Length: 435
Image 1 (cartoon, rainbow, N blue to C red):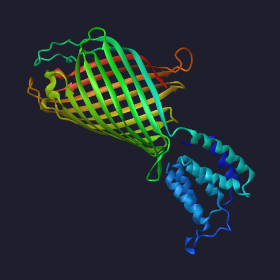
Image 2 (image 1 turned 60 degrees about the vertical axis):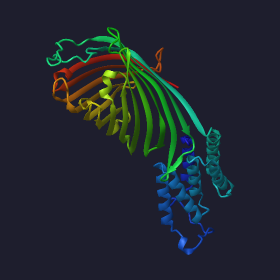
Image 3 (image 1 turned 30 degrees about the vertical axis):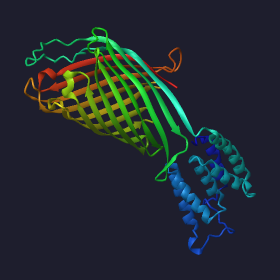
Image 4 (image 1 turned 180 degrees about the vertical axis):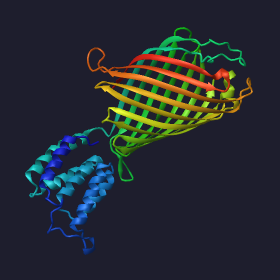
């Protein structure tokens, strides 16, 4: 894929210096259109050229190619348009076509020396890109490890429960180990696809990961998840990106297997420019529990969501706000529910290598049937707040690592007292990407 901006800058500068003062195209007395009806005025040519340039800059490379080719079919000697067509061919990975157009300009005795030198410099990048493999296999790894302290690992009721006969003060606090390890593979096809005139890159992305919260006071509430995901992705730079992944999560709680979740997850993000974007997400999951006592919880879930995100102050600060709707039926309706979630996230730079961040999630749960013990249909509001700080080490033994410290507060308000709880988690960890 074309990425040598210095070569393009040199070529564009040479072209600009040799362009006519008022119009991109000089009059061509020798080249005649195929017929009188095909003749384009200078103003029409100028407008068509500017439209093609704008389309290419917005990522619609194939639409730009069509317009440049049409211009040259009417005015074959317009070398400015021919050079821009060659650059467009390069971006579309049509290397032979690009070389042919560049050679045509070089063979023209009227081509200025500055343009010749710029083309020759540019051809080095063109040749280098052509020799690259047709596709890349990229591997990356991520590791995070740290300590946490959880004030309520067992989700004990806030003030106990008379109906469930749970006394007050049963919450268990414990330090623990917080870990996340992943290995990712990305297959990237070099030649872009043509989607509605835009150059679109195809990738296949896969990841295997392990997430763990393991406590020292008791292992009964340890949570470990092994996940495997894979699926295609399409990326139209500056326009949109989408992916469709299938994921399998195997969850372990305490010393036994909790269950298996298989999900299909489409995701689509539209680039609005100026570091702004809108993301649409969906997910369908099949959930199967491993223990006989949990069989009534088996079921599925369907999620729909949308979010708006933006970067501010260059790329130093950022905001995101969004919502999710979830329908979660279960074999035993007392465990089924629907919910809606509102969330907000933001970060702000506090230095060249540090930032603070805040995440807020509010999720309302409406259950489908009465809880068999209390006889009440549960109605709950869960609130989660996370405040954190990141610092990137730029030198020393920890160069390349990121230190994260965070504190979170969660509260679940339920009309059934056994399910109302509070918990605070504080943590510190080190994380790093490896490639």
